[in-house]
Each structure stands twice: as C-alpha cells, then as structure tokens.
Length: 77
Image 1 (cartoon, rainbow, N blue to C red):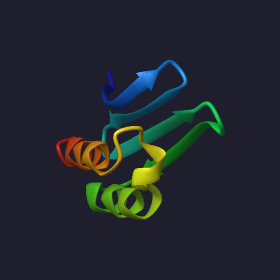
Image 2: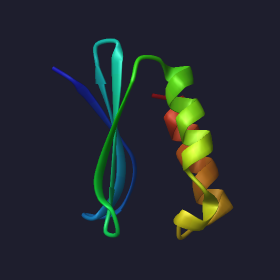
Image 3: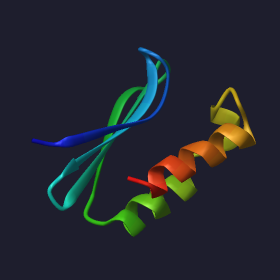
Image 4: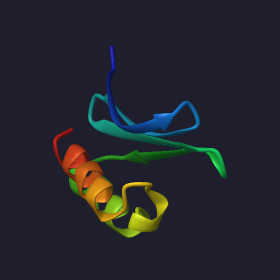
C-alpha cells in the first residue's frame, strides 16, 4: 500500500500530491491549464531540488506565504 500526501489542493483541478512507493516518490501536479504532470524521484533531496526550481510564488493564489507552506509540506513527506 502506498502512502499518499496531499501537499496542496485548491479544487479538483489544482492540486499537488506525493505518493511514497517504497523508495520512489511520485509527485502528481494537476492544474486546470496543463492537466496532470507526473514526476518520479528516487530521493527526497532530488524532489526538493525539483520543487525549488519548478514551483514559483506567482503560481499560487497565496503568493510567497503559500509557496513557503508547500515547500514545508514537501520537506515533511
């Protein structure tokens, strides 16, 4: 059984989830603009490096504060 963590969820079409599948972390980013994107990582540092490069404050309705909460949630996975 896989552990699924909801990092953020604005509605059914804008969310970010992380599934822990053994040693693999599967990040699913669903947006109303781009659809579903799936990224697989073998380590948490690799996932955090992706998140720091990929996620920007302009993409979140809450701006910098919501981005900081998302990054903190990703660190706690």
